[in-house]
Image (cartoon, rainbow, N blue to C red; front, side, top):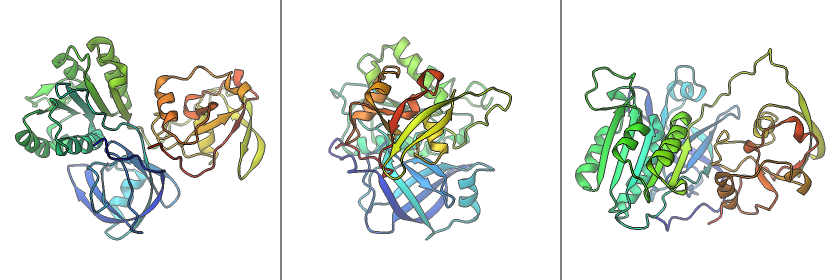
Length: 368
């Protein structure tokens, strides 16, 4: 699996819809194929972004390993009033065109140091999709490590790939699959019950040296990080995660007083100009709302599309960079010493007057 290269750069692809197939009560499998003959090169665990007709973006992880024919598989939950959900239910069919961007993300397979190293995978909802891609590719490559897959839901019907995982466990003796129903879930459930991170922690009290992959709701990802690192001795560098965020942000509080700071922006197309940005939110949100950046992953430090370059004086006024942000920046080509992710910069009064440059709007390259 480690031979699979990162893409030379994340760029738009024109695709055609092959099929929309039900997987469960509210989840569908969407299969896409390239329209140009140029297929997307990705690594299992990464995600892409679908561009809707009005320009809105929706992000989904690839749910299957890289295929020779270049087709892409996504698992998408349909929401009653979701914009893309409505398109998939009522308007889109085989042959319809969709523009996608990507791939993004670095929650990809890391070779365990030995065949004895335990590997844990934790998911909620459709967070199982990228883990399925990782798992299938690892098993096909001959991974013999002990692997546990923990999947959280509210009822048996939520585990739409249960039969698939049960089949894999019969083929691979090193694999264990544990579906977990939340404490407030189906009262008739007779299997494992609890929060998925708590069940994993209880079954694996010592994760020193283990590798962990986590995908799903942000609250679960955050809780799993804290629980497994603090209580189970997991090394922070061995915690690999992507959080799924809502496509819509909560409305601003109309009764909350909002101050603004002045920011000097430079870009290739618009030159240098001054903007007043509201305080109290991330710089990414302001730049994305102004149509200046994509901000694909919603601030989860997994896409790099919100990168900005500051002048040295402005850079020195920011809080120190953390490991996750540094790791993503180091994976981007042409990333300089004064680059930061705008999703990690909170607009506050003490940053008034900072100066930053927006990169070319083309999607960011990823280092091989």
